[in-house]
Length: 235
Ligand SMILES: [Zn+2]
Ligand SMILES: [Zn+2]
Image 1: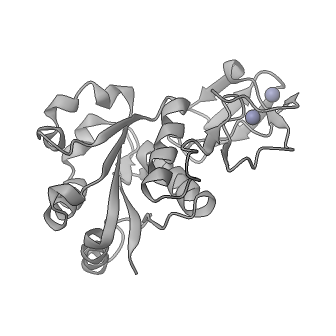
Image 2: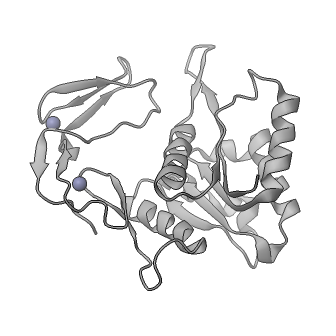
């Protein structure tokens, strides 16, 4: 089966001062992107949470070799510059470049602000044409742009409407083709969030609610929450 999008990211890292490994922030971002593309936009997306460290590398690697040449768009997720050179990340990029001539490449580089400062050091930007498009994950407006780029690339937005994917700046939910209409914006106050990496908990000071997170890199929802507004807010 062919894929529209392949998501490449570093999967695990060592928990500081422990031997145990945990999923990277990149994994959680990639998982979120996969869920929006696959479930909301119906863009066929390859995302694997199989660890190459725990599983049969040969089988998994064979699968990657089969999938990448048949994926149209490459999405690279990177929040730490040092992970750019990781073996499997580099290998996935190499496979994509090898199987896609320059006029067939479409690459989105979803990164953190910290990574953007190192962009000149990365070889995929050291080209005249076909530079990857940079998306800053910390900015919701850029996430919204990214989903619309992908949607427009696959011709899924209605003609003349190139921003059919919208992200509410308050509840951070992703909407598509007006499916926010008739729903309330129910969220916690973003300025009242306190993350405690020691106890792996998030406290919403607006209402004193505490939730647990799987590890320090996990993303969490600020909706539903204690603040109710009749409409969502879009930029
Ligand atoms: Zn609250
Ligand atoms: Zn909202």
